[in-house]
Length: 166
Image (cartoon, rainbow, N blue to C red; front, side, top):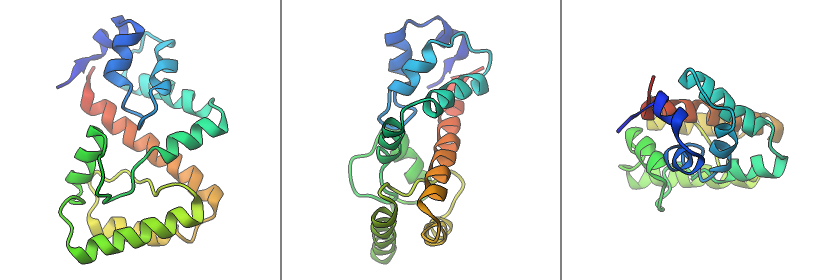
């Protein structure tokens, strides 16, 4: 179900948060800060306001946003957005061997960087995701934090484009 951008611009804070509070994984504060920047003339303008909220947040708050993302192929309760995205990439139908590989790489990644591996999975295959996880294990913490925010940028723009009609 989609909602019109014009409608979002008319919503009070509570209704705006009800519609967009989950776009940034378990971080409704992003939508709350963006609400103050209304009206939005495009999805890109809304997304930019949301990313500006992230970029202007305290480091601990940004770390919390990054850490709120689930592991890829995790067998746990996911947000509706993450569940649909991971299902679309085939991560909910893994063989035992594939599940083992994802679990090992998730564990190694979190041990090295202190936060989960984040990647916009739309249009990706399981093997592409495993390869990216292996490659990014060679990065520095600074590179991966920057990459995580870039991936969050991609993920959230996809989510907004799915949710909103201009």
